[in-house]
Image (cartoon, rainbow, N blue to C red; front, side, top):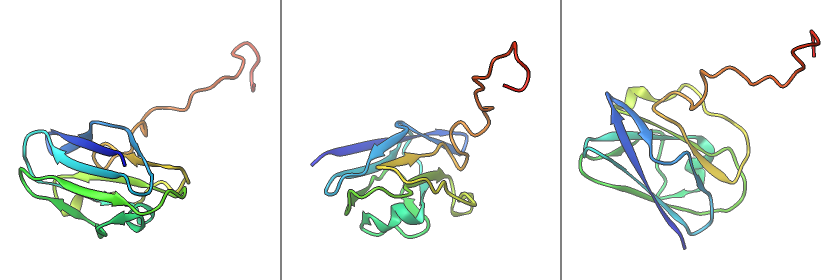
Length: 129
């Protein structure tokens, strides 16, 4: 069984994970800790919370200087994501609901890449393409 350690880098109260995603495989583990030993919160989507043991609840607190570890209880695809924050009030208002076989790790409570405009592959020489 694989074990993935994710380090949360504290950037002024916003936490950036050391990985963009973790494969969801029954029996594998994922753990979270902060790079500076500060406390932090992990917010799992409902789909992710349903396939983790122990069950993390809505906001899981990582104590200062500690590590939080979870085991995946399923390998089935689902809407799996996690966001991070400095306090319980920094939870995202919603999570992505796309099914996949990975736990998507979001930077802070802001989705990675959300501010980037979509890429257009149209023909710039032909308007409307």
